Length: 360
Image (cartoon, rainbow, N blue to C red):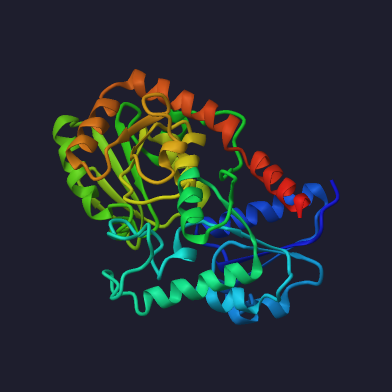
């Protein structure tokens, strides 16, 4: 397959799901002998140069497809790209077609556009949304989204088709042994282990971080041998068997997932979460609210459990039913690993994007 050069762009150098997808594509496209490159707006290493969004178009390699994953300023970045350029935009959240919200949540007119004044206090929300839409109309990019949910929403606002390309991650050949992972982390082999994980930890608003401790306390009363890890915050702390870890690298998170029994993921809004895929790759059942693209990742009662959005009582009861049954944990975990390997491998994702580039 003969493909043109592809230049990826993200907001952050290394952090975040959008950046990880861009870097996985960068690595994967090398197998197709595609000349790929990456730019970003915020460096996380002192010796790496970033570029402001308004300079993106001027630095685009000649003849390259511009593949934009995210930016801190959509009008400036899109406005820098010359008319007629080949552009792909992957929507990792809703910000391209809102007045500032990554996810509009309960905005009363999210389907129709932004209110004035904005109920969430974004300045000039409707004006910003209209400037983004004008640039999309000028450039006529190919739009892609990892979930059918976001594709439908984007099509409503942007008035153009959106291709659905689910996210993918490197999938291990087999599940890591739970006993081995627990031994490495010093976790008792007979304990029940639950995991919360989100960037920002208990301060992660979209991931209901403010409810984690309450959920844990309810579960602990029913399951005295339960240990819980809450990962992704800014500090390390232990409160009885509720253990807070700060942001950890991917290898450490994979080890912790291998040692756990279930991922508790009470997200209030999501597109196609890489954390869910990582849990599946570790053989973990996931208990989550059935919001956004989550039902496209988790098969209810087979690879995890879906809970009515926002129903804390149902979430706690569902998590308890899974964690109480070691056989259910094993059964769901194995199905999550196998079905995820079929649907969400990085090789499948790279191949889907390679075919998209070829169509240009």
